[in-house]
Image 1 (cartoon, one colour):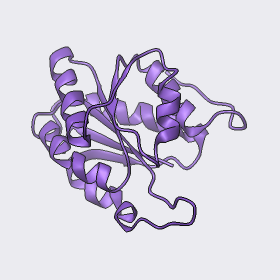
Image 2: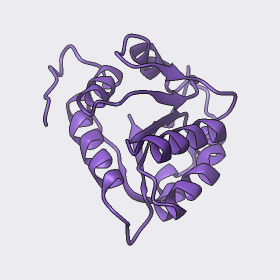
Image 3: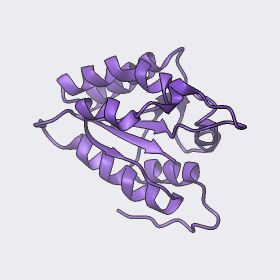
Length: 170
């Protein structure tokens, strides 16, 4: 399964949604925020629903529960910094029970020249002890393969390392 977006016309968010479609994802759980609003705009046009609970922890637990009940990949989307740190307990729970979970995390960055220190944490370093792999595609054309690889890792059997996968979208 592969897809190669036209880099001049496809955004990172559109490439992410297309990769999720190729994976036959049934639903996404997550919270929109300033860093991932483009992703949620693209998800609005996706052929599957997106559920937005009250916090990131709930989104991760919902994606984990979905994976456990259906046996399919659970997908959650959170923002950088506090979105990721709020999701860590759910990610750890999925790790302990080997649930196939894909976590989409927006890239940390600046908004209109404002620096948000909590959003600047080294996200991969925080997530690495809890996940099988961290992927950080730099361009839209790299996103589908990163999503597909992360999903493949998440769905592999009982891991030596954790079961979740972390994908930071640039």
